[in-house]
Image (cartoon, rainbow, N blue to C red):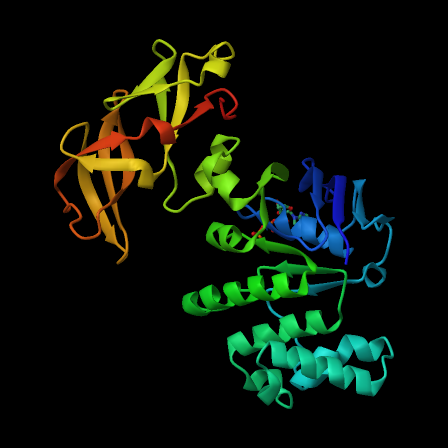
Length: 357
Ligand code: ATP
């Protein structure tokens, strides 16, 4: 096992003027489960592929443990990758698929059998060892792809959207199984997804990328409660954080009937006449006074109800989403009133989107 270090690692594709990954600085600790997340095209897969040796590094370095692997072939790197499409060999049985890398490495047959059986047990695949991939369900194929990686006992696992071909229910089950298994094996893992719920539930830490640039890398809790900029604030959380551009009055901003102070330590830095104020749906109270909102849609999810509507904020009609009481949510067309918990409000710069305070 080993740590992984991206040291100002950059990927610039031929003919492109902007890097797909721009000076990525990130250390993944030995045994850690690190999730790379971000919107389509932000550079997640390219980062993973550089680490796998499948994409050329334009500048900077990649280390596994203390070894600089930047110039090494994929085969030399002692990593195992699980792809979105599983990439199983159709003509081989499950056992042969799982043991294939060991066979190539000329591992003795008895040892291959033993390791395959052990991992098959771990993944509940024992009864399928003689089947071909086409005779398996999507979830079973996914487990075989995982098994093939685990059997190799690599220093690092790389996973690129490994759950994206599963239906919603199976995705939820499988993400828990993968996270538990990773903790049991304690193998350093880099996991790519565009799904922020997957990122938050699985990762020890989550690295958020946007346009090839690392925005923030932190525990799920910190990302959620202290996003470093407007991008991370809007990307992490579902439904997304409400964001309003508000004029600055007397070292604060007014949201409905709530005075939002700008943190004292940054007052001196705020030269702006406007700030971006963010509040998550769960930190808005629906009461009988405050900011008037006309309800457009109520999404009832059983345990929660999300209430979408429009309100006038700083002279503009704005979409707002608030979490309502699932037992008696408001109705479409109703006028409701919103209050905001000033303790839970986030304040960002309108100039560069960075968090203030
Ligand atoms: P997705 O979630 O859609 O898979 P991603 O975050 O994994 O996206 P990448 O596949 O890493 O994004 O792509 C990052 C950027 O690099 C994109 O702008 C993409 O168009 C570009 N890119 C990827 N591969 C190549 C290539 N072989 N040649 C040129 N540009 C590429």
